[in-house]
Length: 113
Length: 109
Image 1 (tube, one colour):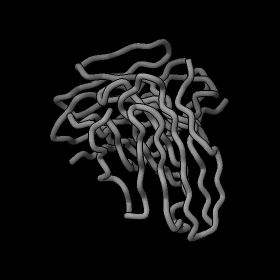
Image 2: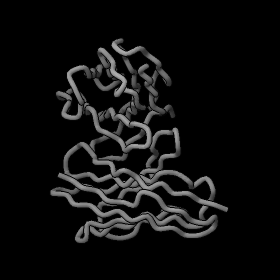
Image 3: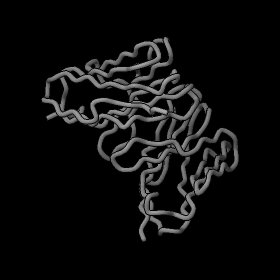
């Protein structure tokens, strides 16, 4: 079956511009996570969605970052006024339940010039 | 809070066996995961332990001791394609798992 998909796969943007990243989780997966991974670094948790519950935004690094999820389907991560330190791979993962293994999308590589 | 410790890098020879250790401290526990991440790719799930003991899955096995806060991933009959980063991931009872920094495994001929 289809896995987690993300778009775009690569995004190059100028400092100060806004970007929107998209994640389509596996159908039926109620939990959805966004992570950031800088080059050579570990995964950094950003935000978590579980069904229709209020999201856990505790990992968002600043108020320039926001995310939405439509029901139990697609999610978008928006970064406003991008900065060079936002350059990273943004990974989305979904799971059937919060305690289950996560299935990761291929990621979006964001480069802010 | 949680703290995960695993070696930064390991090297091994093709065909050999390698054990990647992970120690952790946590106030809650609902499982320990291992993921594999090849360079430039997303992590993929390898194993999940919630009870003490050894879980075997083909060439890969994972062990857990909750009382010692210790896990290891055992890779047998190493192949060149096993060169990757191996992530120890802790479920602390909440819904946000904690990822370790990963162990970069280099398999050479």
